Length: 174
Image 1 (tube, helix red, strand yellow):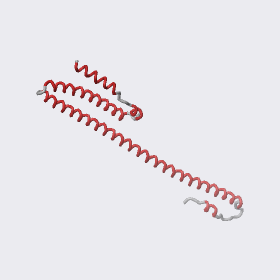
Image 2 (tube, one colour; image 1 turned 90 degrees about the vertical axis):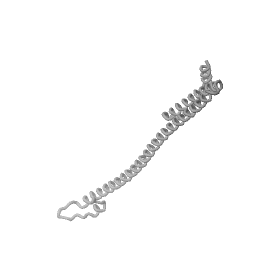
Image 3 (spheres, rainbow, N blue to C red; image 1 turned 180 degrees about the vertical axis):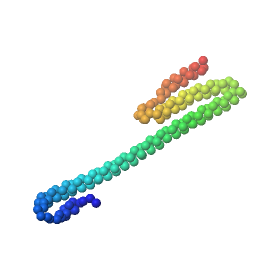
Image 4 (spheres, one colour; image 1 turned 135 degrees about the horizontal axis):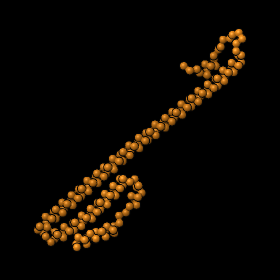
């Protein structure tokens, strides 16, 4: 067990003939006591600082774990959104194909009317597909790019889409 300052203070030395100078020994012991007390205080302060640093480290480790978990959840959510968007797009395309098939069957009995409707549906499908493609690309970019400010500034130019639709319409009529 280590010595305490009190152990040093209470230490009695036997006296012998022509022994050490008692005042010098006491003075030296007093200096040892002071130094020892200082070392004990410093050790206690260092232990307290170490404990605080360990608590801070544990706190930051907890924060890091929470952030990593949040990132993982966000990535999983992003993947889920991507999958759902793809499935929804497939359902929309399948629904459009079903409508087109129905119109084609009706065209056997209503040739001229259905032919016009088929052309109309093709144009709508192209516009829908272009819109879906833009939407999918925008969502994919959103998932791949954390720059939300740029996403909020993104605007679809309706006049350009209209011009493209009219251009596609004139191409299919020609």
